Length: 160
Image (cartoon, rainbow, N blue to C red; front, top):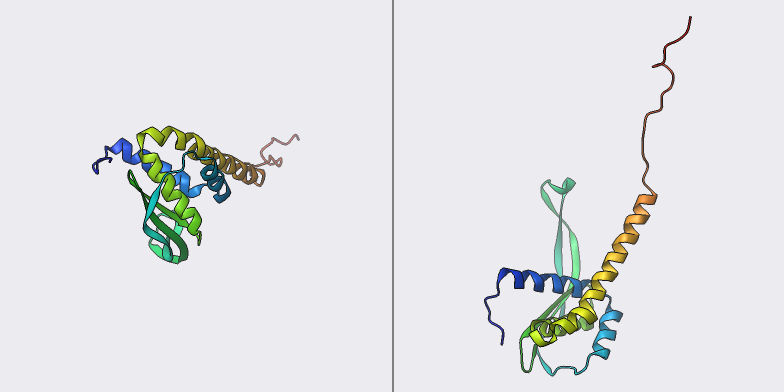
């Protein structure tokens, strides 16, 4: 069993892994689960539950906070029969995705399975996210308008 006191680097690495898992496509998580061998034995700590969270924003990014609206989230917790607990929190009403995130989180915490989870699930999820970000940046750049000033002639000296 892993200790409850994680060094800061371990906590940051797990936080980054959970972020990648939560952002991963459900089909990719399903495919990784189907390809996983051996699949671990696990039990529920908290079955998937869907609820609402309040999304807050700031005017201008730095102004006073305001309530933007509510967004659905699904959470889940499992424990491996011979190891750590895993947690899954995902945006939307996606109980299967929350369960898969929790299972892969628990497997990631096991030192002997971490490299496998990183290679099969987390690295592809990060690559897909980076590709989507690059596509969004390219689409945004295509709409950019560069404003510049043309010399209209009043700055030139006129000949007599």
